[in-house]
Amino acid sequence: MDNANVVTGIVLRAMPVGESDKRITILTKEYGKISAFARGARRPKSPLIAAAEPFAFGQFELYMGRTSNSVQKAKIHNYFRTLTEDFDTSCYGFYVLEVADYYCAEYAADIEMLTLLYQTLRALESGKFDKVLIRAIFEWKTLVLAGVYPDLFHCLSCGKEEQLSYIDFTKNGIYCRECGVGMQAKELDESCIYALQYVVSTPAKSLYSFRLTDTVLRQFARTVRTLFHKYTNHKFNSAQFLD
Image 1: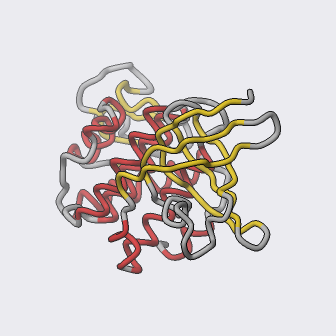
Image 2: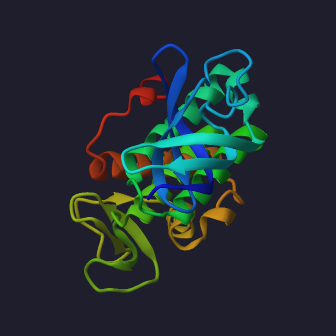
């Protein structure tokens, strides 16, 4: 396809190419993940200098060729600059970009994942939510969108939907209060189970609307970490600054 297209997306990563260019990866609403060259983006006076940076969200005019794409113009709506002003927050920001890069396929539109990423960056930027909670919500919803997560709405043994209490990481599911007794399963607080179910069933645009007590948050985060490691066979470089 040799034509110009305007896409909406977020820059996931950028790497230098040659003396003055960059190759950027963008998660777009229209095409999913795509790569494009930003010619001259490393020159001080380049109109693409800020648009060719991670976190940049906006519209990109691309020339899409048979073998490569190139950025012609960009109109950035949010640079998420405050994310990079604090080391701890920027580490979380780069982590979610790396996870999105890993889970998103090229030329496979995934609007819900783009929405999740954008809302996650907004939540980080706002400073209103515990970053541990943000990470857990993002990781759990990413698994859900990828279709690799256990059923936490029905008892593994009897199928009941009420009084679910024990999660079994080896059998990929949950037991009710009666069936879970004596099983090799971990008992979870009712609020933790509700939070896990809420993330599964709620659209990405509305996810960051709840908080948890410290005790429940620790349990929620540990549970999601266990599930994320179980279903994600990959080591994320940016995670070393978080773990």
